[in-house]
Length: 96
Image (tube, rainbow, N blue to C red):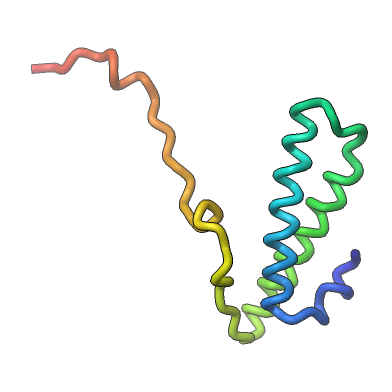
């Protein structure tokens, strides 16, 4: 879809579409890992459409439209990514 197609959509509908595309990308990545996906074209188009939707949503937010988070959002998507800890500190001796 083009940028113009998403600009006429309501913010809550846009958020739902973004969430659906996020889940679809997850499924497509899983299929690619299993070797079941033939080509990358579907993955690329979904990824680009999601980026366009996020851009339109951000533009609406900047324009002053009130955008509330979806209540049905999964808690995993709202959670901040975990920080990676290296193993370097585990094997070092403490200095006295």
